[in-house]
Amino acid sequence: MYGYYFDPTYILLVIGMVLSLAASAKVKGTFAKYSKVHSTSGLTGAEAAQQILHMAGITDVSVVAVAGSLTDHYDPRTRQVALSQDVYGKTSVAAIGVAAHECGHAIQDAVNYAPLNIRTAIVPAANIGSTLSWPLFLAGLVFSIRPLLTVGILLFSLAVLFQLVTLPVEFNASARALKMLGDNRLIAQEEVKGAQKVLVAAALTYVAALAASVLQLLRLIILAGGRDRD
Image (cartoon, rainbow, N blue to C red; front, top):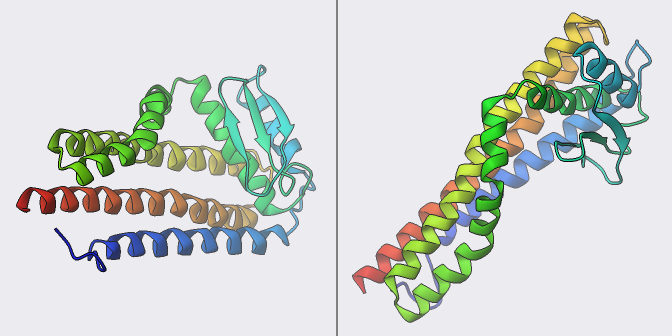
């Protein structure tokens, strides 16, 4: 087993943390930059969302305000596009881009986009996996119970799978958003590029989260292998 004072697999955690922090800083910086660029259309995030939903023929989804910053999301259970205080009533390019992205998820839901359905279906298993994986793995590590190590790794793999399926869902929602904005001239063509930069930066946070989880999974496998050698 590794020395008491040093576990070389911690480097994998550090790499994952650096990637996540860098992605988070990137999205916050890009959002802040384009939050200062007001759209020539004068539409708020909420108004843009309502127009996009209307043009997509979606009449059973409401647009609501939610507290926090960058807490925007689409909830298929309540059929709501929830927009944060920096998006709902703001007329910036960043606000409209984020609002359009969340509407992209509503459109995915309306057309039964397969990756979204898969992600929704595995949410319960992913939640169980992220909750129980570490306690079981650590118990297996401490008490040298190989089956617990294996179960812990498999459960954590469910959480990694969820993040993997999330990528096409997020990229597709952004693509739908940018198409709706451009085709329907909700913002000027030159402003679409700004919205795209905001959404690309946001997408990088999901890529970083997946990379960090894969590195964490690799760490579990290495630790389990080290226990076997002992």
